[in-house]
Amino acid sequence: MRRYLKVIGIALMALVLVVGCQTKTDKNKNNANNQAAKNNNETGFPNWGYDYQQTRHVPYDKITKDNVKKLGIVWQKDLADWDPNVPNASEDFPVVKDGVIYVTTSYNRVFAMDASTGKKIWSWKPPKEVQDHFDSAKMEAFSIIASRGVAVAEGNVFVLIADNRLAKLDAKTGKLVKMINLWDTIKGATLENRYYETNAPMYYKGNIYVGSSGGDSGGFRGFVMAFKASDLTPAWEKPFYTVPEKGKGWMKIYRWRCCMVSDVF
Image (cartoon, rainbow, N blue to C red; front, side):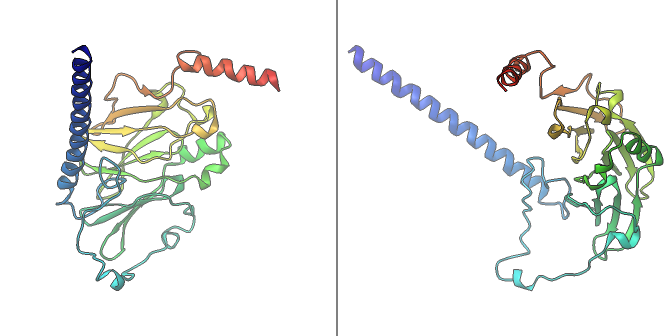
């Protein structure tokens, strides 16, 4: 009898686990489907990665396996024709919103152009103080480090500057509305500490979310921070750090192991 009850108990537990996994899977699928549904009315490429799941999948159905062979170039533009000094590194997803394409290059040059004709609407480059900061930090390599794109929302374009700033531009004119220093809010987030920014900011419900770059530089503590899109003031009291403070948590073990390896060699 006990054996029978034990078998029944195990079977019921397995059933609960299966149902739970299916529920979680169904929920994830529904979230993804809902996100795609929200974007079905969007005729552009509204976010880096297209949607909030960063799927890069565009649910348009005008291009099919039958007509794809008819695709051809409508127009093409060389950004250097507009500015001969524009750097040649581009790794962004162009954001397309309301018939306008927004693209970036390294050194955080931003270009807006008519999606149907390729005609330039405006271009923007960071002010001289940013270039001076690069020069003083002796970061010549930043000339080839790309900006991966922008966020477009509330009539503005948001772009992260490689020397750890966040800029807000007017989407119609390209004029600088406001620029903040991330290190004023995020302690130690400076070029001198080997932090930099190449990722695209993300907009969601009134906030601009930024991450961190520079993990390949060593001695780096990753973070995520949110700022209000309206005025770029902090939306969070402090950043969310993806790595513990030095000497705490698993970083304490990591430092000990590094020392042991060093002693061996």
